[in-house]
Length: 148
Image (cartoon, rainbow, N blue to C red; front, side):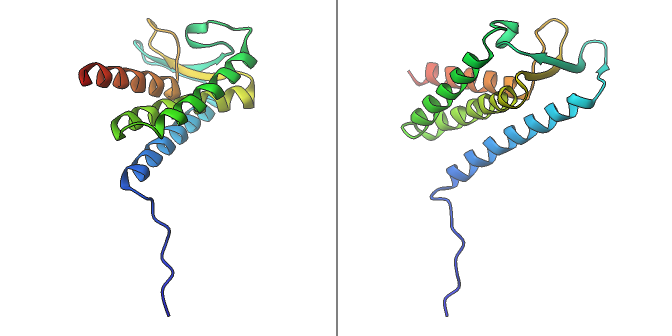
């Protein structure tokens, strides 16, 4: 009698990308949920407190929540389209960006705003998803620049 084998990912990079995606998304959502009830703390140069961001980055487009949700969905479709057509390095950066976009989209759909909580006091308040998007875009830009 043959043993049933567990399904395997077709490649180890797929497992890596899935793990990175889920780690970012889960960490983002857990930290956001914590700041819905956490009163916040100020450490001088950095503070953690709840900001309900109904707009886009840096507080722009506050009256366009529905449009921003649609834009996020379109961005995820474009990211998925490029992901399947890209090499593994580009795929990793797209994975990081996609996790950030989905994290903020989930907030926008669930609450009607994005939960921000990291306040550097000299920069607009942000969250883990925002950081993932920035890291992914910068990494992708550096890779594309050096590739040429």
